[in-house]
Image (cartoon, one colour):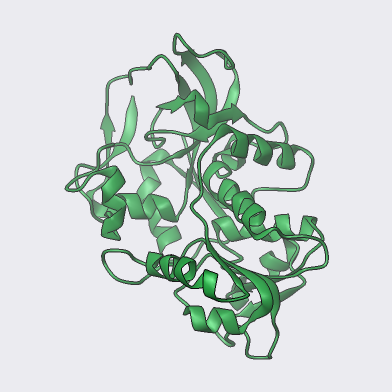
Amino acid sequence: MQAVTQDHYGDTDQLRLEELRRPTVGPRDVLIRVKAAGVDRGTWHLMTGRPFAVRLGFGLRRPKVRVLGRDVAGVVEAVGSEVTGTSVGDEVMGTARGSFADLAVVPESRLVAKPVRASFEEAATLPVSAGTALQAARLAGITEGQRVLVIGASGGVGSFLVQLAAARGAEVTGVASGSKADLVRELGAAHVIDYTREEIGADGSTYDVIVDLAGLRSLRLLRRSLAPRGTLVIAGGEGGDRVLGGAHRQLAALALSPFTRQRLTALMSRETAEVFGEVARLVDEGTLRAEVERTYPLADAAKAIDHLAAGHARGKVAVTV
């Protein structure tokens, strides 16, 4: 099979399209004929090994898994001896141990039926990003009538969170560049802050919920825009130091929360069939949709990652196989 591989951490120039053996399927695994794979910021972090904390789980000196990619959608080609809920021929989505390939192995615990209303390209962008957005909405406890600020509203996770918050009846303000404001409004935001022209809180507005998915704003700045008993969820952030990246803000939020009336939390998202199944249900009922801006063939996977890393993506990017 063909696969996009890496032997060392680094930029996209060290990726290559390689012919590999058919992967081995464990007793609780499912082999998928890949139709599409999702691309997100996590793809870049796992490729570069930055920040260094990423390497603790994925290989200190070099990647444990040579094939890049996690999000996947495709058709079941084979199942392990202990798999009971999935059959050959099923259309599925989930997270794999290397999805930029013709074939991918997925544990059944991270696999669900593909939404009927989603194409393979759309479904491939759902598990990690929409799953993270769903968990952020749950953790924040977003309810009808709340004022919700989503920082990073035009990105992969943000584009889903705006939809989820709006569907729950919240008044959503999205933070994005001016060129992406139209997308954020289409997804359900009532207001958009163009971060290239204005910082959050500049007009004195406060929010019941703030979900920070991007950037490296200080806790002090975020708390100034948070209602006295509001909830802050830090679920991401780029930049920071070489070791922890932006994770120091999550640690600081958790440490400070017991000493303030504001609820300061950090999201550690999980990849489970329960989460993915709820995402699929929301897509099929019309509450959630994947805004796929662009697709790339497998041979151009490096271009897909570069496009995303440069901040050009409006919503989601997928690799087709």
